[in-house]
Length: 355
Image (cartoon, rainbow, N blue to C red):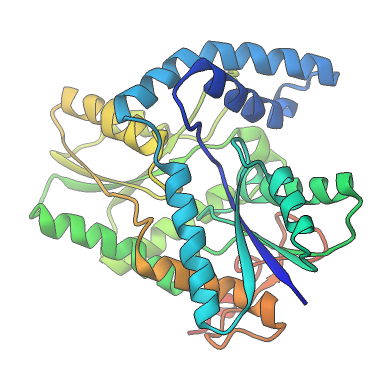
């Protein structure tokens, strides 16, 4: 049976121009249009365009400042490495890369998989922490494309995988590497670790999203690996709609923290993108320096050779139909309670990860 794996990413525009940025933003705002309770599709489309045109100049400026987003290039590289790793393990699968908001869009990649004769499809969101507008929505995007094509292919999806021990080690090691290179010691008074997580609208949490639970769980485990108990969590919120988001804002954390030096780790990301290279490296760094803080940002380990291996660990049980030799236990996903959707988050930690 020919198996296709679609690695799912956010995506960012290839060019920092209104022609590329406005449609990108329109897709994002339309995908989350229910946050404002608009009554019709037409109203949602009008509002999405309005928000996109308002946000576009600032985002274009950010892309110009960082020299363009490297997200898509890094995503393609991750897909290639995952494919090579699965071939090394003896699995003749094809790995596709698809993006939620830039080309190739999810629907386009699903069409390509069908044209390639794929008989079984696996969706793998490359988002570290499961959220409704990322992991869940990207798998919903595959299902919507299948429905549109009336393609009755076997489809399975994986949502949460941040508990994988190798992933935790990989992120902790990247922090260790930075503090070793810059001679930083968390035991030094005035030196603090700050985790910066992408924010989410409070409405999603009220509707049952466990995103904040996953953020707190993940940060606690990284803190344990680093033997750092005194850390803070802030959220990178986008307040375009004037609705409630997760708190506290990471900007507020930086403005009020009692410290001389801060090390900021962007825990929600597996690519460098505008939200790391612009929001953190430019905007947050400026705020930190304005209040007298020495600022250090942990780079994303997007090209760590362990990453392809851990993604292969997660997806391999779906390819083989057998339990993971590492003891990773996938269980039906509670965030996306659809048939064939599994994750590492549904079971208690000690039962989900036995290595």
